[in-house]
Length: 115
Length: 115
Image 1 (cartoon, each protein chain N blue to C red):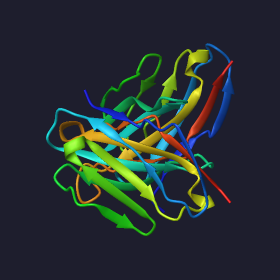
Image 2 (tube, chains in turn purple, yellow; image 1 turned 45 degrees about the horizontal axis):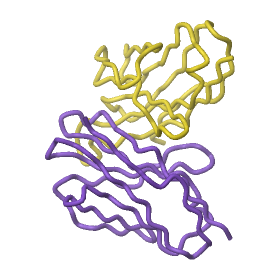
Image 3 (cartoon, chains in turn orange, brown; image 1 turned 135 degrees about the vertical axis):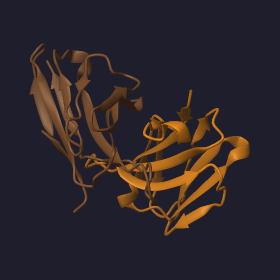
Image 4 (cartoon, rainbow over the protein chains, first blue to last red; image 1 turned 120 degrees about the vertical axis):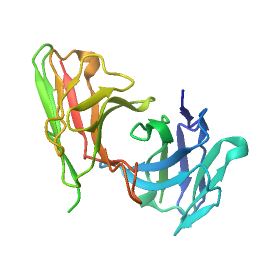
């Protein structure tokens, strides 16, 4: 069975600090997809990134970056120079290629950025 | 605008009173899912549908029903709601093909309270 663990329940930082969110996953499939979603205080879920299991290249999008390491089954997310607008709950999720309509989510990490 | 629309956004009801939460998507997506979000548990899949008239159970289907008579609509039915179904519900849809394959897009959520 697939499983996603986000060990950090809450993280609080001061604006402009960097923050890294950990995500560890378990799957028996060799082909799978990893995702990050953001849930701001307004409640909607916003898609941030999808990465497939064959692409271990790190990715950067503005102040966001992702580090995918198959050797440690981790897909960590870093926000550089955090801003108050980054305050949200962040979810890591996994789907397996044979069941790619099913997303398994971690419990989420609440990030609070203080001005 | 491409979107997933859920209604109602907020609902308070009493134990045993049947209710339906509607979900509609305008992206011609094959896949649709329902999730519930509870504190500390992330999102868990209730039911999913791979296409019209094709539905199956997710991780927590007890107490829920779904139907998929049209591609765009995927209502969630609670025949006899109970207080343990108080939760935040999300509908999602995704395409089964193309570059955005298996990226799930979520509705704004429905906050349900069962008294």
